[in-house]
Length: 331
Image (cartoon, rainbow, N blue to C red; front, top):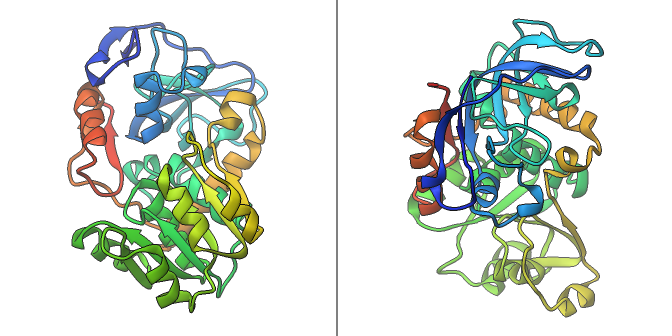
């Protein structure tokens, strides 16, 4: 079968088309004919070699998000049949082939069926972004109606899903963005308070929207120095959930406020085999909300074929996009 592969770490130019062996499903796996995918920062980090411990062996087939049609099911698989439309946190990491190929085998617990009301393209934008938002807000933060929450990067891939999910859960959402276009999008998605972080310092928006008490829950999708700002914005005994913590910080403020810090690394189920069933279960809930119109992934206006993955990764690196960058299998 045809696939887009990399033979070594590096820039987007490392992608090449190649013929590789078609995978065969193990007893607990499902063979999927891939239709769509999307790109995420973790795909870029794996390609560039920033997380070598998570990388598959070369020649490597990347990209975690995958949607397609079931072709064959393993002997131990229940609940899926040939012809089912499915989506998954599929692979692209050590031990799991990624989406950029004609076919891929996926562990059955990582899969969810796509409702009729949801397109393949929308479904493929959900796994990494949607599951990260769900893990942060529901599983870790346990946010509830009337909570006051702060989401950094509310127009980004994870951020725009988190804003919608938080609003759907009944919380009062504040979010940081840069620029008018992203601010308008965040408002449309359900944010009550939109903060241009380049113009408004932390102390100003904490005073304006929390009467200096701080936010009970803060989701930091940015990382680096922004994690320190998250500690500053959090309320006493608040919860901070971070998705990008490859950095060094002084935890004195966190200690002084009695904060709880959670780190979400969505690849843990793939890399270590933990809580795979929860992946499929949470993905099913997200898709149900999408079918009901309560969640809607924002898709960048330009999509790419799998054969054009170099351009998709270049756009991801440039950062000049809104929402998720979609990929359609043209191999």
